[in-house]
Image 1 (cartoon, rainbow, N blue to C red):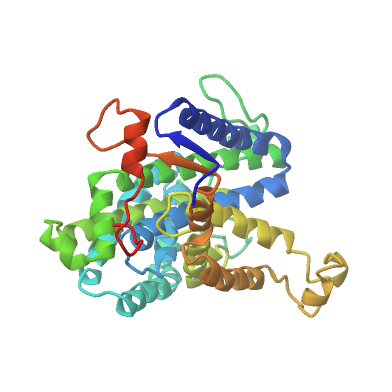
Image 2 (cartoon, rainbow, N blue to C red):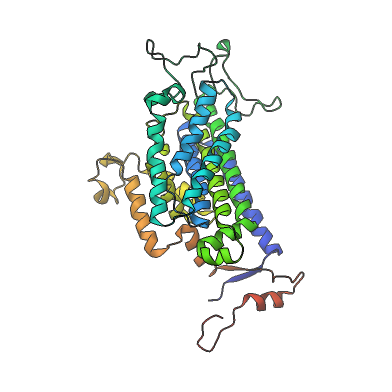
Length: 416
């Protein structure tokens, strides 16, 4: 099918589209923290957390073809690393990000070695066991001296019920200790003398501060994933996903490649866990649902709906999931449901956001198995087609590019 518009890769029209897209994305990033209130900003932070975790999972499942239902454990490792280092040892929250990445990376590599010998449903069961065991370990009484046990972090005094900020280096939060200056707590965050957020004791300013932390982490995770996917390692991942035997024959070291990618995915998934610990000010499996198996399944659904094996897929899926859940959060009350949709959801006694997303997942599997990103790629060619540069032909003419991009047909009419 012919497209309405045809442009060449690297041409003026192609660069114009890229610039317009980038300006729109940056404009949206700047608009959100300046115009939205604290409640809406918290929703945006949650969406960025889902995006980051789903992007990390996408490296393993979308590009390598390894099924993982235990990435919630890696997010929990990041959250507990930040919680322990900040509340117990008095470290700055900024220091915890590389430490959490390193710990999760090592654990991910160690787990990848037995996982490299199995595949399919057996690999899913192994990673599911990881997701189930982690909350139990975090609340285990014998580890309560470091994890806080069932009550989590920070530790509360049994007598007063408040955090023990007076003992040793312990602080009453797992994030930034924001409060009155007279008590030595943080009020502002300055960058070379510039105070971009104002008084952090105000809810809107604090939410904007956390939003930028979550956004920077999401950008770092995206750039890391993109760097891997666009590199030689990325081509090895796709080869492993499509045919492991053929990849091994072509010289791809299966065990080493899987170990690196699984470790990198685990390390990147720990970063949104650090953000969650900083934002909530406390860490426990009951307080942070995303470190349980439910969180791992949510990451998986977000990635699949957005589009597995696509860099933009987890971003789209995360934004859509948070939007649906947020907009339907009050639908347990029949009067809050729009009149047109009331007959379909008035029976529900709880917000139907998760149910709507589950139905959407089932429908997409029939209509668009590659998710929303795959559906976009499938139909955008009817409007505009980007002709890639011919391989090894620098400065090729448009006619040459068109001839290279146009598939020939055999006598049966199938592309050769």
